[in-house]
Structures are given as structure tokens and as C-alpha cells.
Length: 364
Ligand SMILES: Cc1cc2nc3c(=O)[nH]c(=O)nc-3n(C[C@H](O)[C@H](O)[C@H](O)COP(=O)(O)OP(=O)(O)OC[C@H]3O[C@@H](n4cnc5c(N)ncnc54)[C@H](O)[C@@H]3O)c2cc1C
Ligand code: SF4
Image (cartoon, rainbow, N blue to C red; front, side):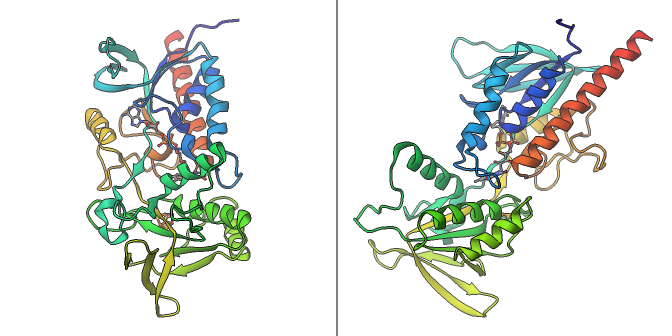
């Protein structure tokens, strides 16, 4: 039996948060417009080789969600599209959508609620010149390393096979690159997922190549995810070396040599200089400029770090200061997939509750 829809929701962002929210809303017979600025759905998760703690591939998780989403008539998907204007008319929002595809003019739509699921992006690592990012090909960001791991699996390329015939056997992860800093271009908060991400990849490397040297340089290890402590201990058992003390410099003495990771081990009070073949910078995560622009359109109050200030009410974990506008996933605060799904499902429930109570009030 097809019921009349309760209302219409605009979901901005087609990462895992937007996908899960859209799906749960559609299952409750709510019409959803899902808007994604890129060509493909899936956000960061679609780019991840494996997800901690389950070690399932990121793309398979996204495929499961998108397969169901594409089969649901309540959801219309608009990729390559962004929100260019928002007007509020009493309890409704009039939104202008602009498409990057030629021949697709601006489109005006009305929505009864809006969910912002716009995620976060890595900070610009070239603003931290001491790490040599962009200067040395051995130095890469964590998301670039994920891409290498995916390529290795899909195309059978051995990513540890060096260009000069050498074999890359020393891998170093540098934590808090551009996070927990007051420096310009960085973010002052903890990006929450990068310690677990480094542990996850260190375990994968050690399981595949027990003879490799894997180092993690950290300020504090924050293995707070479920199974985090277990994975941290597993990495130690496998021989991953944890060094407390963020590197102060990554350099190369001669053109064809390996890079050298330099810093101070603050537990041993010793300086270190570790030659490495691959250095993975665990980049801090921040709002892209397009999200800040969107928050300005809604006229949100924003924290110094760019996060919309919500009620700070424990019973409104995805509410904002504007009635009818919700925020979920990393855009609300950096978090792992498990917490993202939990919050997205809670958000869909909150909107359903709101629509049902409006419906009941209108029938009184
Ligand atoms: C390197 C790395 C490794 C990670 N590893 C793990 C892991 O192993 N396990 C785990 O649980 N978590 C991991 N995470 C965290 C995980 O990626 C996040 O929990 C998840 O991506 C949050 O999903 P999201 O939908 O909120 O945001 P995102 O994945 O960032 O998706 C946001 C989407 O919104 C779109 N968008 C942005 N702005 C607009 C706009 N204005 N209009 C339209 N669309 C817009 C973006 O293009 C994107 O598709 C990792 C994160 C990183 C960075
Ligand atoms: S999760 Fe770890 S690496 Fe990421 S910002 Fe927090 S402490 Fe630093």
C-alpha cells in the first residue's frame, strides 16, 4: 500500500551520513532530495581501503547503501549539484539548486526540513613545510595512502616496490599533522579518527609484511573507537613501534636517498632520526569553504573552528539553532563510521517524529 508522503527533506551531502539519513527517511515514506556536489556518491568512506574495526572495504559499505537508495522511489538523487540559495517561508525552506552540468538550469525546490551532511576535508598539508609534503614523493596524506592501498588490491600493483628497484620497507605514520594546533591552516581540535586509522593501516602492513619497520609518531594515541584498545595492543604485539614526540622535520640529505624523520622522543628524552621509505601524514580534518558558505546562507552561529553551534543539548545531538535544520556526520563533529550511522539514523527518527506530530496537530 502506498501512503501519502509525510513531507519532503533536502539532504545536502552524499557521504555515508547523507546516504544513511536519506535511506531511513525513505523507509518511513518521507520524500528525499539528496544533493551531492561531486559526480559520485560515497564521500570519504568510498575512498577507504578498509574500515576499522571491521576491516570491511569502504566501497562495499557504500555500494550496499547506494544499491538500496537507487531502488527507492522516495529518493531523488542530484549529483554534481550544490545549494546556491536558501529562503525561509514560515515552516518551509525554498532552496535553489545549481548543477555543474551544462544545460541544467537552476532549480527551485521546497523542503519541510534540511539535513546538512557535508563532511570534512583534510587540511592543506603544504602549509606545514617542515613535513616536506609536495616536495618529497615519499611523503603523502592518509587519504592518498588509502588510494594506494585500494590500487594495490584492485590492480595488483605492489605499492612497496620502489621506483629505483629498492623495496620500501620502512613506513612512518605522523599523527596530528595540522590537527590540535593553533597554527594558521591547521585546526585546534582533535580530528578523532586518525589515530585509529594509522593503527588500522599499520596492522595491515605488518600482517602482510612482518619484516617491515612500521613507526607511529604521536602526541597522544587516541584509540577511542570501539575495539580501539584491542587494535592498539594488537599493533604493539605485531611489532609496530610507537614513538611519543611529533617530528619537527622531515628532510632528505641527498636526492635519491630516503627521507629522514627527525624529532624528539619525549618519553625517553632522546632525539631520533629515522630513515623512511614512505611517510604518511595523518592530516587534520576541517570544513571545506563550500560548507562555511552554506552555514552563512543559513545564518548559523559558528564556533571559532567553523562548526555550527547547536543547543549543546544532550537530547538534540543533531539539532541546530534553526528549527527544521539538522546536521549529521563529520560536519557535526569528526567521528567514525559507527557514530556517523548512529547519528544519521537518530536524525531520520527525529524528523519523522516532527512530521508525525505536525500531521496529528493539523488533524486536531
Ligand atoms: C583518512 C581517513 C580514514 C578513515 N578511516 C576510517 C575507518 O577506518 N573507520 C571508520 O569508522 N571511520 C574512518 N574515517 C572516518 C569516516 O571517513 C567518516 O566517519 C565518514 O566519512 C563521515 O561521513 P560523512 O558523510 O559525514 O562525511 P563525508 O564522508 O566527508 O561525506 C560528505 C559528502 O558531502 C559532500 N558535500 C560537501 N559539501 C557539499 C555541498 N555544499 N553540497 C553538496 N554536497 C556536499 C561531499 O562531496 C561528500 O560526498 C576515516 C576518515 C579519514 C579522513
Ligand atoms: S585522532 Fe590522533 S592523530 Fe588525529 S588529531 Fe586526534 S590525537 Fe591527533
